Image 1: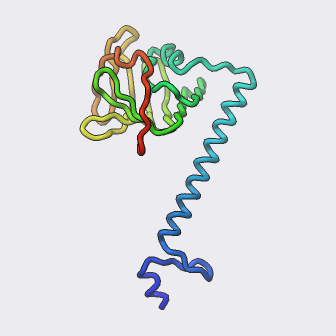
Image 2: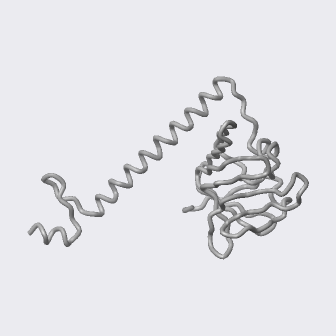
Image 3: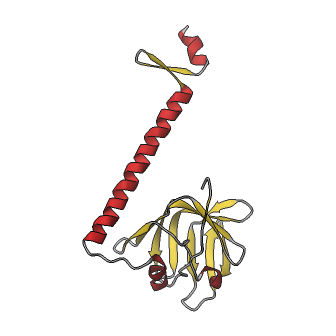
Amino acid sequence: MEKALTKVGSLKVGSLWISKKAKEELSNITEDFTTFSNTVEEKAKWVFNKLKGKPLKSLPDLLREYNLPPGLFPEGITCYEFDETKAKLVVYLPSVCEVSFKDSSAIRYATRVKAILMRGKLTGIEGMKTKVLVWVKVTSVSMESYKSDKVWFTAGVKKSRPRIAYDVPQAAVRVEEF
C-alpha cells in the first residue's frame, strides 16, 4: 500500500500523507516569506539611513556622477542603496518591468537589480535582461569615455547602442515574469 501511494505522487511526513503538489506549494510559501523578510529588512535599512540624515542623491544623478547615462533604469524606482566602499549598487523596483527605448531596444528589470558601479561601468549585473532574439541576461554596461556617444551592453556578446536613447529615465511597463 505504501509503495502504491508513493507512485501516485504522495509523500509520508510523520503520520501524514502530503501530495507532491502540496509540498511544492509549502515550499513556494516558504520562499515568499523569505523574500518578503529580506525586502522588509532592506527597506528598513533604507529608512534608517534616511532618518540618520544620509541624504541620497537621485539614481540618475548618481549614474551621471559615475559617467553613465542617467536613463539606464526606469523612472519610478522604489529606492536604491549604494555602498561606496564596496562599489555595490542595489536598485529596487516596485515590480518586474520592461522599458522600450528610442533605439528600439528593450530592457527587462527584476524587482531587485544588483551590480558593481565603477567610473564608466556597471558590472556583475544581476536582474537585468535585454532582448536580442530572446531575452538574454545583461552582465555589464559600459561607456568608453565620458564624451562617448555609445553605450556598450554585454549580454553574451558586446553590442553598442546610442547613448542618447538612455539619457532620460523612461516609463516602465509591468510584466508578469523576469
